[in-house]
Amino acid sequence: MIKFLEYYIDKGHVFGECMSHPSSDLMYVYIPKNASSWTKPNLKDWNWETYNYHTDNLYNKQAIIVLRDPVERWLSGIAEYMFLYHNQIDTAHLSKSFFDIIFDRVALDDHTEKQTLFLEGLSLSNCAFFWCNDNYRKYFSLFLQQHGMENRYFNYEYQHTTQSSLERQKFKNIFLQALQNNSKYMKNLRRYFLEDYQLIESINFYAG
Image (tube, rainbow, N blue to C red; front, side, top):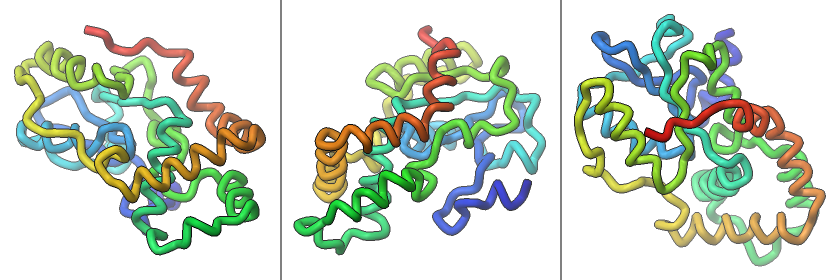
């Protein structure tokens, strides 16, 4: 179990990381590139702290889960990965072999890994699912108001977004173009993220 949890520890993430408060029956299980950098400071304002639902045995709490379209998230994630670890690469001379390797591997870090792995061991019937889109902040606010945490939750802007960084946007455009030009790459992504798609199709998202 510990080896699984720490699979991406060198990239700064441990599976099972979440936020909660001792007096709350809720926990927020964060998934990188799913508005987690916006959600965490809002909960910190309510004195929520960092836990790990595996090692701290928080399985009884209702989990707040934010999901995102797998391909959209991967494009944002691969842009983040390249920005963080390979931003000096010569993007003008990327070979087909380079793209073949990337799309064969698909998951390179926590930003590009399948979302279902972040939910290991959770009871899906005890989760509140949110879709990561323009309505997320509104529904997040409504949900927490219903649990005694009344706030508009607009104190913070979204952070680490691809659109706010020219470098991230450059990498995203490069991989988006590769996807559009090679149907095999898209098939590889959809095959790798099959479990994510199955989860998304099987649940209901909170809508107020």
